[in-house]
Length: 353
Image 1 (cartoon, rainbow, N blue to C red):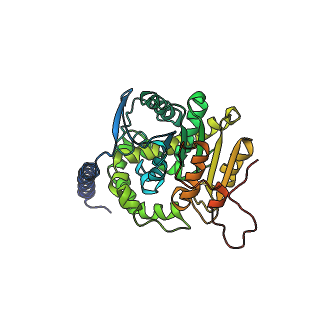
Image 2: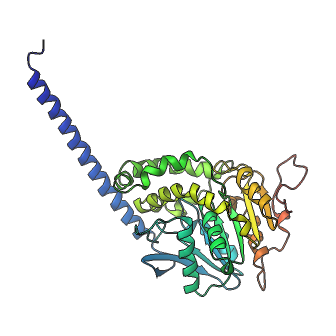
Image 3: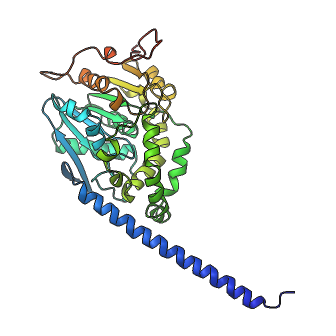
């Protein structure tokens, strides 16, 4: 027999109230800490370039060099600095006018909530930005998520793009567990709380592991995380950009894939033979088979980051589409720039039609 039912209920209720209050205070303290770290990261890593104000977006870009124009679009998690850390920016700027954007929500570009930032929406933003900068018919280079935006630019503004170089891209809709797992982080209110608390902490804990997966089977370059700044990559606004982009990835690939036949411009596809993020056969090789004018380079012994591990190949592929007027960069055929794994009997890096 329960002799003190009311007392027990009050005790349980009191403990639950104390636990809720404690959890709330911990979450609030974590949110304050996360915000302070984000502001400090932005102070310690000031903008490297200039800004354009376009339709309510403050768009950050870095522009270097002279010559045929090249546009660089980074993937998720990172910023435009990915192309600086890899060496792509320095190499291309010798003979080209190179424009590297921070995509909305990444680096120092804002990501207003007045629209859905699908790859098509981002493509429209960059097209307007290039018009403002008087950049005509560039070769657009995209890596990972950036390839979907590059394709949207070519599909929606075909007269404004001269060619595409697509690295480690996702081109056809399919089940992505990672996209499903990050969807809650993209939601208003619930996602906001997560990005300032549990997701902010988890992102910090998982960043090194993610980098290992991105570069596997290669080692993560010692300067990779420091060059891009860990704290810049785990700010709440960038976590929202990552989550939203992941949610838009599958429908964007489905929409784009219905239109690939419209592409008439040169397309170069580069993928790591051991990419653990995006399967080369299901995406790069499949798109190559659909585009008669495309070239495919499967890089042996390389994962999701060929622009680091096969820099010569990437630069040569871009140079091939946008030849410099005077080039000091090696003009050797692209196929000669990839080292083959021992035992390979033919060059896997070239698979043209």
